[in-house]
Image (cartoon, rainbow, N blue to C red; front, side, top):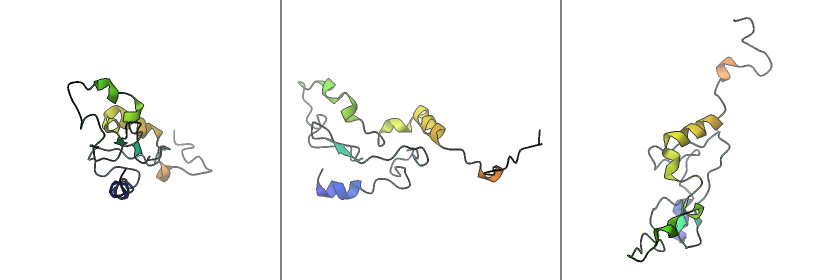
Length: 116
């Protein structure tokens, strides 16, 4: 990761979300911490949102390149991945958030008592 990219990468998130991705979910309140970009064993930066790297097989593709080289967890960022934008994964994140029921809850008194 170059110094130029590192400075940019530190500011990828705002309030536990990726504002540069229009459908990116918020990780706030889920217990999942946003992770910084990392360099995989092939020297490719994963999770920097630049989507290209001089060492990437995609940037150096030939008819002899085996697509399997880009398979596996080392190519997937835990929090800056397009997969989080799917309905299923957004639902997973929402299920991890605590309910925002504060107007109807009291920390020590059952305010619903006698209402049914």
